[in-house]
Image (cartoon, rainbow, N blue to C red; front, side):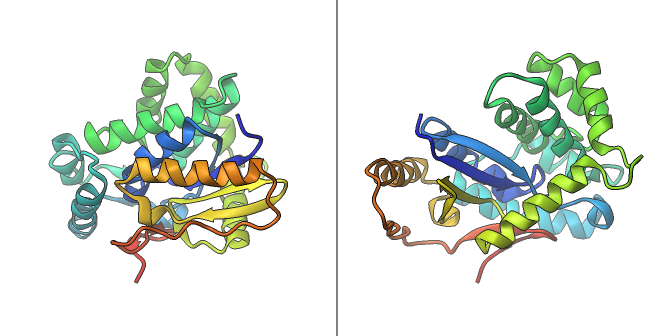
Amino acid sequence: MNAARLHYIYDPLCGWCYGAAPLVRAAQALISIQLHAGGMMTGARRQFVTAQLRDFVRRHDSHIAKLSGQTFGSGYTYGLLENTQALFDSEVPSAAIIAVEQLSTQPDAGLAMLSALQQAHYVEGQRIADIDTVCEIAANLGYEPSSVRERMKLLMSKELGESTCEAHFKQTHRLMQQLGVQGFPSMAIEHNGVFRKLDVGSYIGKPEAFSAHVQLILAEISAQESRFEAKPALTGERAVLCSVDACEIER
């Protein structure tokens, strides 16, 4: 494994992050990945499903599915998105991911939990803003539900003021500012403190090309080249992202 790291800035409720999941899997086979949750729908940005949210999300989901090949299940499209009692809150699933990262000795524990949460949300239509639900999902991955619940409780506790989750989101936002990115998904490869941004949007639906792009970067790092020139992005759709407030396509 190359000493370089891939920093992945994501949100569990970001549809484009679900669309980028095949790229993440492709990169995972090549490089260590560090997750940075962005807190897209937290605090005042949390919301219950409404007709407006449903129409907005479905419009983007259709485009994401077309570009990425990812499946949005009927339990989500015609179940969860029709349920006005369903809350969209990024903090709970983000806390679950951080919790299993802390509880596990496996380097990809967080990625496995993120994948399971995306499957539960976008395919099965489960409420991943519900603590009982995410603990059950963690149990299916082999974790003790009570341990995950207690760790999540600590991560989200505001007893001493700012919660650990809130601090994590702020740290992610600082990294985003450092990299000059504005939304999710965003990725950058770091080596010896030098960051190289990846044009995720150009590779949505093209995991093999993305894998080749990452391999090129790693080969150049291994060759200790003093200067890196990025491989030209693929032509086609413009870059895609979910901003801290909503999903959108860069124009």
